[in-house]
Image (cartoon, rainbow, N blue to C red; front, side):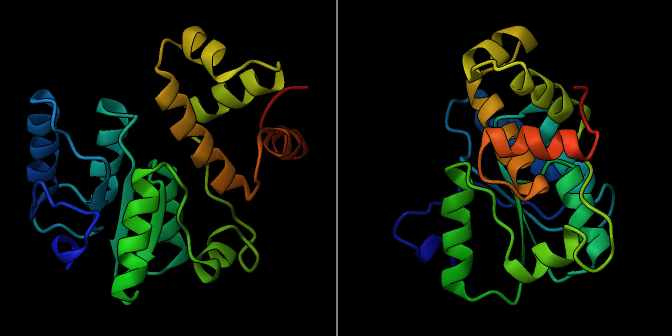
Length: 193
């Protein structure tokens, strides 16, 4: 289905987390790496899709991961977001929704349907997705008024990685911009000051 979409090209497929990680490494080493990884939670033997997402976040933090799963439990959505996924979509989404989500994720846009967002962000359960230590570092830099370029230089990461982390932060905090992120982080005592 994805290959039939005009703007999408499937460059690799994998049935296990290990195969997925190896394919990403191989493609990126040849300068034709993917723009987005579409990951399931259950991938047969070995690590889960959540664990693979965490691994990709460490090895390729600039590469967005979109989780597409049959599992819509709050704990699964929260685990995926905490692992660094840029979004989460259920497999019962329409083909158009899936194609749109892949395109948006590749562009760095956070993807989480409203019903999953309400549940995952705690409107019913009181829990929110955890921010990673790197996301907290970036929030603290934002609170100091630093630009993406300054944050990247200070944390020894690329500006693209900063932008990806910011999109994750905005989604996890349910905000739309830097100022709102800092305000929400201070209100939740995620950062000092």
